Image (cartoon, rainbow, N blue to C red; front, side, top):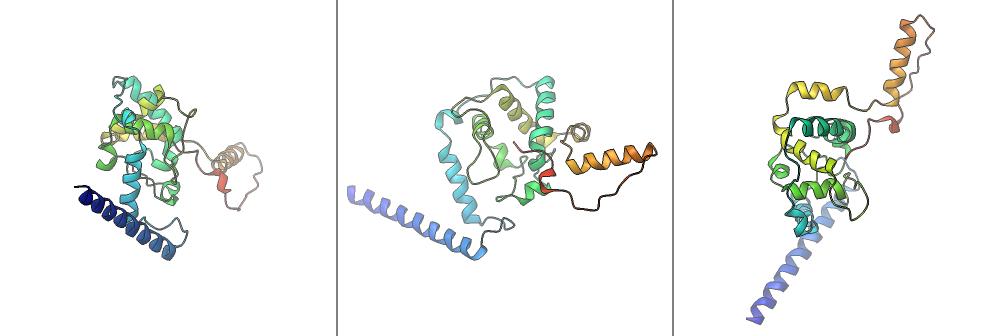
Length: 212
């Protein structure tokens, strides 16, 4: 019996080493570019590590907030201001910043995300995910906040979000410095003032907001 367990453990270690070797080889070939899509092996390992990294008690947490229109209104504004720059208002991740990350911002309406427990979603929102663009929020070791649980409800709502909601969110999205300059120039032009044109590309730090 002990010999069988030992052989199984050695086999498992060998498989892990082979997987890590294959991963290192693919990364060496691809270089450090964030433009590439993670390989299937890398994605599988990342999902497995994410699952293992979330404490069991966090996974079992239930959302203490009841779903309501008030909760969704609050979460929608929070998402539009903090999360949409990477995830998009619709949660599909099809933004310039979201597609420039490695790995790319996920489609939050996809079953891979929707199948996570409320506790897992809240833990990820609160603590972020290492080696991705997802940051941590709040003080280390603190439980999910009310805003975190509101966002969990909003993530559940994303697959059925309406065009009216998306239109409302567009007005809540952060405005870049470049867009502010264009707006001021237009206001000055309409007021009959002389306007100096600036043909330089907008600064990189003027991208919309920060993600959540």
